[in-house]
Length: 71
Image (tube, rainbow, N blue to C red; front, side, top):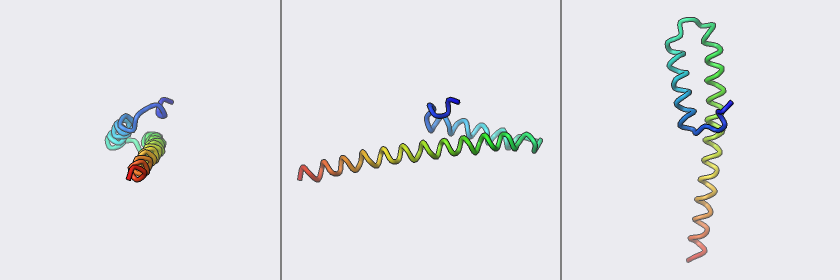
């Protein structure tokens, strides 16, 4: 599965396509499998978002400490 190598934007695009297909699906039996894929994709997006947030937060804290040291 190449979801781990994809960007949040790419994964979001995939999720939106799955949502569209769910909205157009007439057979509820097919919807269960599609919905499971959407949940999996959502979990991957959430993990990537948290990882990116942590990275940004760490970089920001480092820059703030550097600025404080210069004063």
